[in-house]
Amino acid sequence: MAMLLAFAWIAPATAAHLDGEVIVGGDAAVERAVLPKGFRLSLYTGQTPEARSLALGDDGTVYVGSRELGKVYAVRDTDGDGRGDQVTVIASGLNLPNGVAFYQGALYVAEVHRIIRFDRIASRLDHPPRPAVVYDGLPRDALHGSRYLRVGPDGKLYLGIGVPCNVCQPAREIYGTLARLNRDGSRFEIVARGIRNTVGFDWQPGTGQLYFTDNGRDLLGDDSPPEELNRLDRPGLHFGFPHCHGGDVADPQFGKEQACDGFAAPVWRFPAHVAPLGMRFYTGKQFPAEYREQLFVAQHGSWNRSTPLGYRVVLVRFEKNQPVADQVFIDGWLTPNGKVLARPVDILQMPDGSLLVSDEMNGALYRISYAD
Image (cartoon, rainbow, N blue to C red; front, side, top):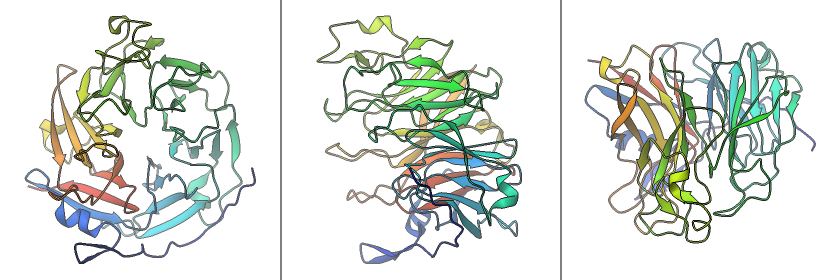
């Protein structure tokens, strides 16, 4: 597939209208967001169309993936005012480049069918290098083909590989898995199975255990099955798909083949159809102490529920390394009359302890900060 690499300043986002108001680059999402006392939401940038997954460079540059637009962005706060004032397109014409990961000066990008790498990217934003192909053995299905990509504590690349269906028994072993490989593309291995589609994961501080979100199947009603937060206690676990959903919901078609008690169960359940995606354990010092080592999760929002749900950021509370409760942290992006103001995708912790949230709908990044 031919690749076009380009450098460009992105023009301001096109204005949209909501209830007679002119909305530009996520302004309405900022104005109507509801957060706990002491927290503030501000617009980091409204110039990253289709903003999806986020990665942080050593120098504070934020790298942003997208989907259909095929672009990868680099966002810099050049004057330190908490707002990204320089936005650069570092790649175009890619195949749904949702996943981005930064490690030791290199930017890794997960397309549908492969992983590529841009070396020494921070010093070459104006003239990005031609990427090296790290691994090209991934399925080419676009459905659930938005790969989430991270570098784990072991220095390996981790990514999710969704199933090419709503519910089915995948024809190939690679579907419905969480996989890892060396950064040079060698030693590809599957570490977890039975996962419909994970587009977010992180490692818990202290324990180092891998937690990941999983989006449940559709067409079982408004309130079933629950969405999942899972923990990989050891490599090789199977989390139930397509036989079991949410830990205890047998699939009408495939549930007779294997009982739910034979699979790893979620450690936490979210309401059906909220679409939990990116997530981060908070390790910064800007937020009050009660938020440290707690989990922030972006809920992208329902698409096939009679009453919409999601479109928010939730906080999962942990005690003694176990999830015990969740609560809405950012609300207001779904109005009482059902209008959607934002669709959050990923969360990133910044060096100063603030958080960024990407919003695919508005092409924006929002900054969450705290002040007494």
